[in-house]
Amino acid sequence: MTAHIPESYRDLLEGPVVVSLVTIMPDGQPQATPVWCTYDGEYIIVNTARGRQKDRNMQREPKVTVLAIDPKNPYRYLEVRGRVEEHTEEGGVEMINRLSALYTGNPNYYSTNPALRQKERRVTYKIRPVHVVASG
Image 1 (cartoon, rainbow, N blue to C red):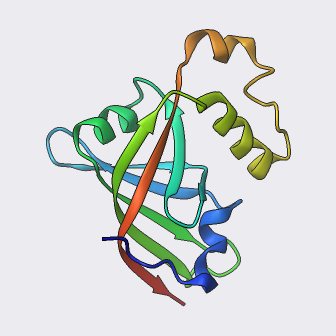
Image 2: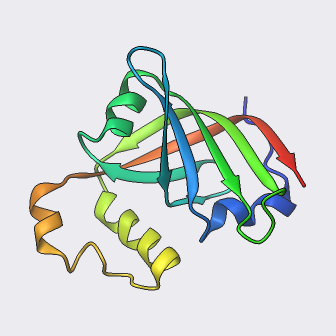
């Protein structure tokens, strides 16, 4: 079942707000990483490179939390506990370029960096919200 993201807090997921993605390490310890994200009305979407810790954690344990804090008001925040429902390398480069355009204004950050393209395989994760806390 999908939890509802309040319309008045969607701006925190639609960017450009850097969010904390919390995944679970093999020993059960939470691990937090700042990431770019977007929201498509159903899923929170994040992108990473294959083999990174968050990638390995989400493949093993699909329970995650996304914490978005309003950069203009730190008492306004959105916590979304969710479940990874999809992950794919298909379209991964396009998604990181889309996020780059949103966060930096550069729609070709990844595509124009051949060193990154040669050493990384990009993967996009879709996270279904299952519990939402909106405050502030």
